[in-house]
Structure formats: C-alpha cells, structure tokens
Image 1 (cartoon, one colour):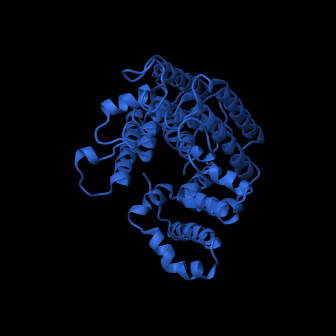
Image 2 (tube, helix red, strand yellow):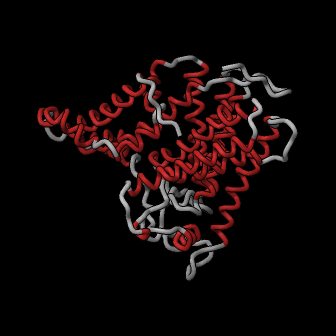
Image 3 (cartoon, one colour):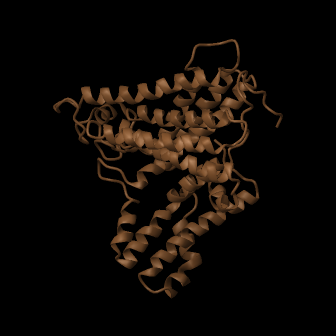
Length: 389
C-alpha cells in the first residue's frame, strides 16, 4: 500500500488498528454460543454466583440492561470505528464521494438482504409470513446512513477531504440530534388510544409505526426489537464508532493518552445514560437514547482497553483467538444456515458427552461447540478465505 498523504494541519494518520479485529472477534465469540458455557455452569453448580453471571447473558423482558444487550450495538460501533480506516482513507486519496457512496449503499443493502435470508432462509414464503426486520438489516441500515453522514454532513469543499476536527464537529451534532430527536418523538407521541409518551410494548410510538409501515410479520407480533423506526438512534451508535475511529486515526502512532480519553468519555456517557434513565429508560427493544449512551460508553471503554493492550503496548498474541473469529464475523453469523453445528458437535463429541457425568457434560459440549466453530474459522484463516461485504 502506498503511504497516505496527511491532511494539511494534522499529523500523518495511523494506518492500521490491530485491536479492531480482536474486539470484533471478542464480540462475535458470544454470538457463536459462548453464553451457553455460563448457563451450563449455573445449572451444574447451582451457585448463586454463576446464576447471576448467567443472567447477564439473557435479555431483560423490557426495560433494564444486561451484558448480553451490549453484543449487538458493539458490533455496529466496531463497524463505525472501521470507517475512517476504509472510507476515510479512500476519501483522502481522492476517491470521488459518489463512488464511496455507491460502495456504502451496496454494503448496507447486502446486509439487509442477508438479514432477510437469516430470518427466513431461502424458501419462498407468503409475504405475511416473512420477517423483514433483522439484526443484520439494522446493522446495514445504520451503517449505511452513518457513513452517508460521514461523507456528506458538512458543506462541500474543493478538497476531497475535510479537516478532521470540523468533520467530527458535524458528526457530533448529528449524534446529539438523533438522540434528542428520537427522545422527543417518543415522548410527544404514542400509539392511538395510549397516553402521550407511553413506552409500553403496545403503546410506544416506534412499535406503532413499525406495525403501520413494515410489511410481513414482526418478531413479537406487535413489536419488533429490530424494527424500522428504532433504527434512527442506531445510526447514532454507528456515528459514535466513526467518531472514535476518527479520533484514533489522527494520531501518527498509538498513544496511551488516546485510550485514556476514550475510557473517560465512556464513563461520562454511562453517567449521562443513568441520569436520562428516569425520563427515557434504558431499553434495548426500543434502542432508547439512554441505551445508546450506555452501550456506547461500554463500547468506548472496551475499545480503549483493546487499543491500549494491543496497539499501544504491543501485546498481541493473546488476541489471536479472537482475531481469527473477527476476520470472518459475517460468515460465522450466517453459517448456521448451511452447517448443522449441533449435529457436527454431537457426531464428533457424543462419546465425550457420555463419558462426562451429568450435569457437567452440558458444559463440556458447550465448550466443544465453540471449539468446532473456531477450528472451522481457523481453517479459513489459514487459507486466507474471508467473507467480505
């Protein structure tokens, strides 16, 4: 790769964020089924401690926050962090914005289509039985619009780039505007027959709009946690990742102070979320503004930790396990549609399941389940086979 020319008035940007693939792999590790390890431990031991930990790997019924709620927004945040290292790099090299826009839109639409396939398979279904909203669909839509804001938020200039601080200011305004705007829309409206600002599953404005607009079926009939309207604040999650990536990329080399500032900002966001919670409760189902601040704060802290350990301190070997996962995140997420992992796990390790006494055999099988998936990804990693969207 030829070296990039720095933006006038700035230092030369760092070229590679090694911690990003590791953090993405850490995130996908839980989606691969690692939460079953803790559920199995809780059942095997009957320990209140492990029961409490296992409960963190479930979703609250409505309001509230568990660790498992972080997995989805963290992935979207990570996709945002990568933007300045991909789209931003090409923008600085003079690639026309319209070409980058086409690339961003294509990626977003591919993820939306993959999300529909993930929900419904490749079989033909009546329109009323198709669920269009999905995890990948929200990631695709939020990523797409966050990147469009990144490309076009500020007034046009002759240069193919914009001074980073000015671009970040516009993105920060968009970030705050999306969160405050979504809060006002939810606070000033509701489903017909419900009091203004109602945030129940049936009465909230976001679910009502989804019932009116989205074709097919919703995940819970009257509500979909990946619905269309609540994608608005999810765009802010993607923007926060872009802001974090822009901040890190401006440095000519990894620096500890950058990690410290990210972590402090994360703590500030969590404090703001707790202050906002009484007015606009932390709620993953509605992707509330306080939820964005909570998960955004935790994402910034995790990014700071991984960045400091891997990029600043250069301690990388421990992260290889996660890096292998992170390099093929979309593939392993979709793999359940063409690989029967339960069948393979039973085929290879049923003897171990029978040999280990109950109830510990469930824990062993949960570990082998993850191990099989990792070996599959490691094989692809060695062959340099990566699914790129």
